[in-house]
Image: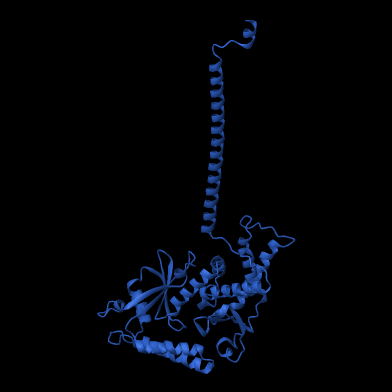
Length: 388
């Protein structure tokens, strides 16, 4: 921005998403939200937030929908009217940021796209030299709040972190990790894992059996649940109140979570906005479900009789559903070399210790012999004593 009234002086940039929670892969993008200070009235913002909370608590769907729609319209109006005195008053901050990136960073970017017509309008770009992708949105509080919520779940559920890493790479390897292309985004995937762990722990408590945190078993059971057992047509998911399922066709849920054109969609309630469906953009959920089903059967074939021997990528069973990248192979090779060097060093140290002990033993024997011989010098033998 080269304007006289530089809006960057009145804004705050916050990090959210996987970079904020620590659940990022090497190829994960960076999610940023720009909070424009002084745009819109604070009183209106408080009223708008109160309206959202009341809409979330209110049991009447029509009032909830009206309150949410009014809040969205107010946000759009404020965004369009922001900084009217500027020469580019006809453009929203989103479009202005896209234009500034296009003008000033043209040679630095390999990809740039402004996506205004989505639930969360954003600017996407990729830095060419580092291949780092960045998503920027404006005045969205849900992103940072969602990051804090995920951190809470991570502290309460230790298996959540490793399962998230595995499943994020699983989705990325199949090109199904972007919501705007119909895939499953990080937040929705994490909510699916949280719901799975909640119900698993509840079943263990109800049936009085210990819930062992075996990551291999957890992965197989997760794939079995969402690939074989879960009814996508009739059932919705909520992670509030320790997790529960709800009927999508219920009179108070149908308006928000049932899609007649896509009845197979996964209805996932947003715990921060109970009337919002996190799974609504994922129109390729049937493809995701089939990939879970196939992967579950592949893993099951390796752990049941007659067992299928893994010949792909050595003897790794997990590699049968998660193809390792070149970087993973290099890191595995380095780890193997390091382990071999450590074993060789340990063996060498062991041999040195044995040799040192033998030397000490021989030295002790020599010392004993020396003392014995020294004591016997000048003393007549027993036979000579008897003769005398």
